[in-house]
Length: 315
Ligand SMILES: C[S@@+](CC[C@H](N)C(=O)[O-])C[C@H]1O[C@@H](n2cnc3c(N)ncnc32)[C@H](O)[C@@H]1O
Image 1 (cartoon, rainbow, N blue to C red):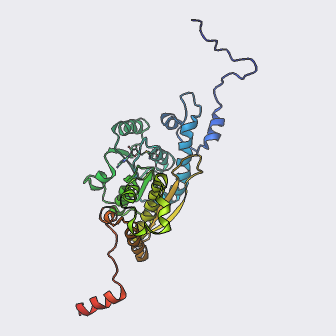
Image 2 (tube, helix red, strand yellow):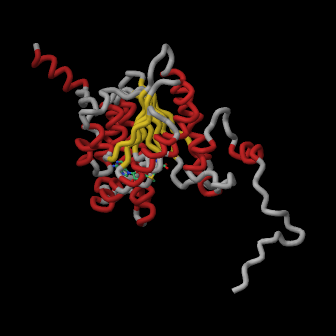
């Protein structure tokens, strides 16, 4: 068979290597950022061209970085060495970019990537060794296992979870609360647990109200399930002493799951949020999830009458 003619077609530019500055501009590269890392993450091809799919990921990660960098700056003041756990790390795009842009130059602090898929963990370990990103560690375990692992630090400053599947985000929140994290940055993924409960119980107390229309069709059940889950997560964080903001990560063209929850520890545990959470669980027939998902929920406050009775009994 004749070989394909590789000569450029008339009128078309030759397939030239992209100018380094063009790529840098398109990628919005920051000073000192590792090109080798971007190639290893397949954001750049070996020839230094942009890989459009991976570029989307980079855009999400950059956007997230804008929220995380000020937190890191604040928490690394006074020579503090920040510990950060990235849950459901996948290929560790986020962890690597955070290290490259922040931890590398700072010279202190450590990132842990937690991921259940062994090949991804091995690849990340190799890449970190090649790039001499010495203060990165990758653990092949679930988020829940990492919370219980006795070799893990007792405290973590920052917890991130970018599209950690299903209940892995809840586990990441539990990890953050256990480890007294000062900040959590969460972009939840698909969520099935609450939708399954809705399907089963049909939120009994609400079935005869027009509200039941909100989850009658399967696709709505799924979306309502996700919505309720994230609302419950925010209330739980507030009840546990975090101030919560919820915004959009990037435009819908980049990801269908783009709700960004940023929680900062203030120590002010909102009773009203704990109560609202309990009420929502009860209304939607989800109280069975309370012990599993919200173990740190502060105890119910007695009503004024009950409180008065308790005071009399105590006296
Ligand atoms: C959608 S990917 C996101 C990966 C990465 N954070 C990103 O945004 O590119 C979710 C990752 O979470 C991992 N995962 C799912 N459940 C997990 C769990 N319980 N503990 C740790 N990792 C988990 C999956 O193996 C998968 O790699």
